[in-house]
Amino acid sequence: MLNYPATSSFNCQNTRFTPPPGYTLYPSSLTLSSSSSSSSSSSLHSSSQYHQNLPKVIAYKHTHFNISPRTKVLKVRCSQNEPLKVMISGAPASGKGTQCEMIVQKFGLVHISTGDLLRSEVAAGSEIGNQAKEYMNSGRLVPDELVTNMVIGRLSRDDTKQKGWLLDGFPRSFPQAESLEKMKIRPDVFIVLDVPDEILIDRCVGRRMDPETGKIYHIKNFPPETEEIKARLITRPDDTEEKVKSRLQIYKKNVEAIVSTYSDLLKKIDGNRSKDVIFGEISSLLLQVEKEKETEKSGNISKLDSQFNKSASTKENWRGIPTNLNNIPHSREIRDYFYNDVLQATQRAIKDGKTRVKVEINIPELNPNTDVYRIGTLMELVRVLALSFSDDGKRVKVSVQGSMGEGALAGMPLQLAGTRKILEYMDWGNDGAMGTFINIGAIGGRDVDEADDIFILVAPQNAMGNCIIDDLRAMTDAAGSRPVILINPRLKDLPASSGIMQTMGREKRLEYAASFEICYQFRLLYYSGTQYPIMGALRMAYPYRYELFKRINEANGKEKYVILSTFPSRPTGDEVNDAFEGKTRDQVKKASGFWGFLNSILST
Image (cartoon, rainbow, N blue to C red; front, side, top):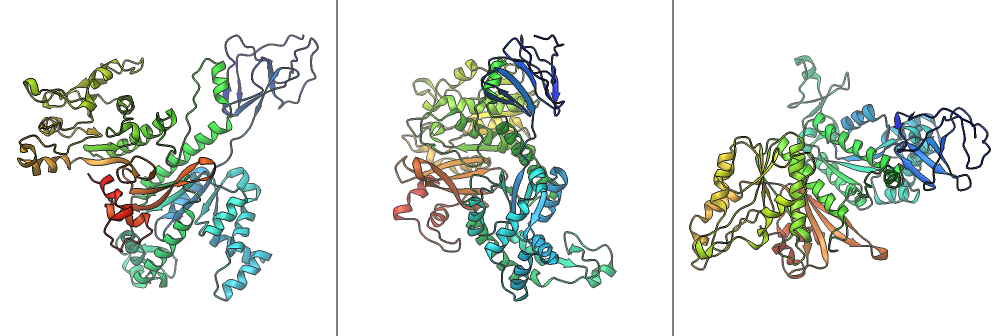
């Protein structure tokens, strides 16, 4: 065998690769075989190769490794990640156009809107353009098939394949979405800008256009610079309240028609904020999607990591709700999904200055009313929150209520029995966070230290004839403006034998309990009095709206969750019933009979 100088690492498209200990990496111009003879040289861009008996195909970041079964040679070749594919939808005046501009500027995607495409095809005099022109000139809508063919043709061009694409406001109907599905054209994420109707109407009705420059103003939010400009502003014909409401109804109907197609990719963004804040969230989302695509592109990365003595990661990322939630025990992927979902919502709330928040999550393993409740799952959730805040330099106090009552009546809720000991013996990592940035204490004013930055209270709850509210209030008073987070609190009054707890000071206790704002809620919906089958789910993650999902059975025993409706505040049982039955919001129906089970599920 020829002797060539070995190297310790090499760079491949900004990715540095270092072989495992004991492995030798040879120059890219040399091919080594398992036989005694040397192979012929490859071209300058050919693969680096070295002897190892590894799996046939493995990948690491941007670098892919192939093993020839005959020569047992590892080849290293470089490849680019798949570009982003994004769909975005938003009602008139939702700010969709502004966000599209910002997305294109940062991510370099090809912006595709049907309006621009139609005008371009008509101007070019193409076959599709001429057909579309006939419909437009006669005042008719351009058929779905024609618009879809136009979009598919644009998506097939080289620039979209290389740069990725941003599909703006398309598809608008179920047939259009179905046509894309048949062509296997599917986005990585479907973004919906969510803005309340009253805000959208105000934005549209208040808009004014300068006929000389075409510039758009708003009489309140973006007034003209001079009185001269103000005097010549006009209202566009479509910006009357009546027409805006009609356009909103059409938009909602279109979104409802396609949302089931993309329910697993749907990401709602609160559009009632400044454009920079909105784009910040969209940008974070797209960067996360890029990261997921990179991981997926890497293929069997866990196999390579095991060769490097690294722990393999098998975490599956969902952009919808995990399925099979009645399967116990929950998988690690399902737990991690909810831990992360709760963490992100809580972090957003704290970042926005919320100081009294609570998390309510009742998946089976976190629902103490079921016989599959697992205290370990609750402890893991608390650990994820505490470690995350400590990583940000916060000193976290994790608090568990102690014994309640006196003498022979002393005791604590069964759900919390042994909780403090479990927390003390848990694995908190090797970086020394426990005892420095994280400490364990009780609930009460005396357990608030000056050094504490944030407090996480584990399932605070009343016991039969005993109330935790006084200790809780003493703690929040001592905490002042520092954040206090309640995890699955149960602060309802529980009756004592004398009934005292139900009468004395009850109104003030309930008022105090209600002072904690929900930053995350997830509740499964079942038939009345049962835990099977799951009918749907209600989810809210701060600062977004409540989302109501319906569970749908699919072929081969699979299932999925389809969003039915959203609500600005927690929906009542009647509102949930109406959504499940397909009733409109303005139809009032008293919950009873078949769907009456939802009232008890949604009660506080």
